[in-house]
Length: 265
Image 1 (cartoon, rainbow, N blue to C red):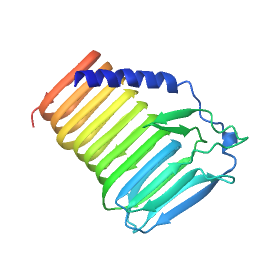
Image 2: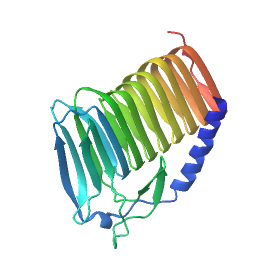
Image 3: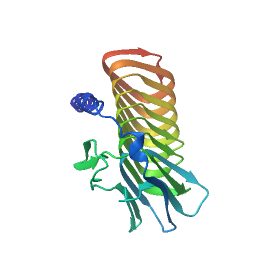
């Protein structure tokens, strides 16, 4: 466990150093973007999103269909959206945009290369139901997931904030290399919450299983949290506990300052 955590810390710091030197494309490069919308009323149980540079919001509503609102170019599509065997897949295209200087950098994510794209919004509105899996991988941009119920929920961003609110998940995995990770007002089974540089906030969360919170540089704040087992690993920064309860609790740090206590439920 300790070796795995140290590896995460080192990898997070390395990613932060590599990614902070890049900048998003300028507003001029967004001039040709036009609004688009995709809708489907098919039975969807799994959702996969892989994006390069977007502010992604996934939310639920009282509706019987899925709506995807996004921006596209007038020349080549930014996204490939497909539905097959209950899986909704949303991916940025990998082709280069000739003459537009839109590919400022490339980032490796799970063995794939994603290219830099103009900064824009991607909003996915889902019916209020139980999903088998929701997986979101974002290179650069804010990521927000609101009110989603899923057996498996994965939300990861390389650069910028990740915020999950009002979610229900049997297994939650969320991480950001550079940017704050926030989980609030949620009910979960097991969770791994990783922040490399930026901090972690967990507030008003109930977990029936194990919750592992890891952070390399920055603060960790836990408030109104109840878990069967709580593991907190913070390398450089501070950790605060307020009304936190766990049957089993462990804490590890290098240069870390803690305040508050963890009590038994």
